[in-house]
Length: 333
Ligand code: PBG
Image (cartoon, rainbow, N blue to C red; front, side, top):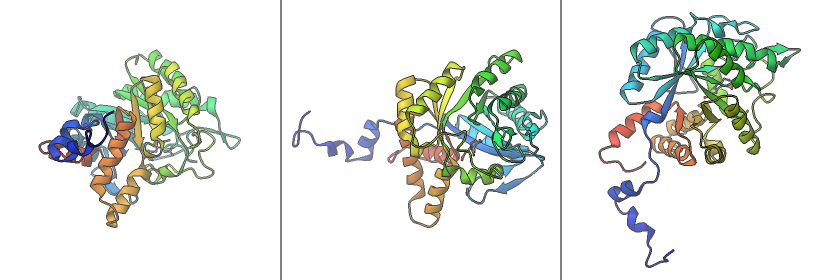
């Protein structure tokens, strides 16, 4: 490699046009997914305190947000449901007339080109807030598989393009795949939350989805933040069981895992920039401590650079808007 003064890296940083020309990584709204929280009712839009700009909405208002996403070229939406009633089993999860199924039908009718993904998990539906059924106070893995499969089939029946299990039970991808196939939904894809880590970054989400566990935590089923080799095992298991797409979550604190999963599997990879990552940037920007737009774009480009094909982010609309505005004289990524 030539050395100074023959090679001067600064030559290509001198102007916005040069920087833009040699940029290695670019963001595209088509690879963004916007998470949405839906509940029953009409004309309902309740702001989530710890996530400025994010709301719980009824289906009619969800369509307003989804139309915005579609018109900005955002690739898809990821739906979370807040049921009217919760019980021990989480039976609202497979309700064909619940908020998620109703929203899916409305979306596929009005915006058929927008990819509709549903989160498949029990925690929003169980009275105790855990991601599966409790037996002797512990989340019972195998008893939960049937319930997850019922939920996934209900979402597929409503028309979801992709179902996304986020519960972290062992064997759920296989159970969901065979239930979908048996029910005639061989073409419904699975995006598996494969390497989902337990930790402190989900707090604001649990306010949004009203899904905080009433006792204990999720360390018995979600991954330990210290482990990366285990993430690869989780990812390969999900691929073997039929996952079409795998996921690492959270994104920013686990960029090394994103990198390894992409390098080793080559599979379509999603990364979830979770509620806490969003809230940190929003909160610091509100205080004037950081430039929120720049931090948003840097955090997204880092996730992309690490190897994510798809980014699930609460910034999807803001980032898409910014990318549009900049596409003429784009400078900062
Ligand atoms: C459901 C689920 C969670 C998130 C996505 N699906 C919460 C959790 O595991 O407690 C978190 C998303 C976010 O924080 O933005 N299990």
